[in-house]
Amino acid sequence: MLGKLIAGSLGFMVAGPFGAALGLYVGHQFDRGVGGFSRPVSAADQARIRAAFFETVFSLLGNVAKADGRVSSIEVSQAESLMAKMNLDAVARRRAIDLFKAGSGTNFSVDDVMQRFMEVCGRNNNLKQQLLNCLISLAMADGDLHAGEQDVLRKVASHLGFSSAIFDQFIQMIKAQSQFGGAGSGAGAQSRPSRNQLADAYQALGVSDKSSMREVKKAYRKLISQNHPDKLIGQGMPEDMISLATQKTQEIQVAYDLIVKHLKES
Image 1 (cartoon, rainbow, N blue to C red):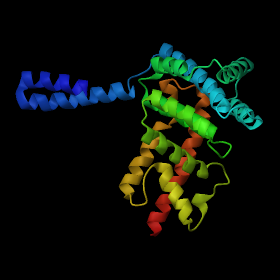
Image 2 (image 1 turned 45 degrees about the vertical axis):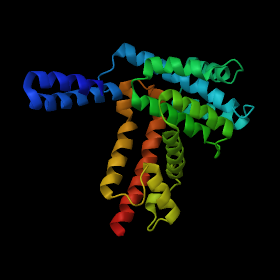
Image 3 (image 1 turned 180 degrees about the horizontal axis):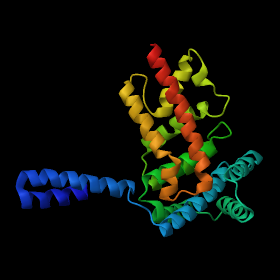
Image 4 (image 1 turned 30 degrees about the vertical axis):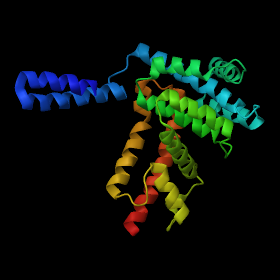
């Protein structure tokens, strides 16, 4: 908004209404760049972002696990499964375990961790969404999201600048996307998907069954872009965490293919 105001005013002073219109367009592109952190990220910044993302994920996982009163064996297994998927070396694995334990400690502060994360990654909307997606997905890995876990995640979402309504939408979308994960989902291969599967597919993309094909495609492309591995690596997301985004992309693809097939046959 600031970019549009400044550029529009300067444009009007230099070239009248035409200059103002041109200035507004240039300012809009500037605002988009600032908001989405679309400019190239230096190697030094990438290293800082990778470290901040890694530390935030594992410490918050420990805090979420402890949110219902105790860290269960299932939650420990989930954290270990994540480490295995990331192919961490011995040093990184030890660091992840230490962060998880620190997050589950009584003196841990979500506010302090999120303040540090936002100082490093706060300008990058994709990484902020990836952090929340990652934490929600792992919290729901046992098939449930307890009240205590949801309280922690809602606080994280608030620090990231997401409203309660957007947070609730993330929850619903990730729940629906999880229905299309793994080789056994098979939703796209069925000749005629059930009503529940179609409902999950639309929910996974954040659209309704009243949406047009154009709206469905737009939502699909946006989600694919947000989870594109090369883009996320370029923005500083740790490469060993890219498997989570890749899995999310596969779930979105299956949901989208199911909707497209349904609409073509309708």
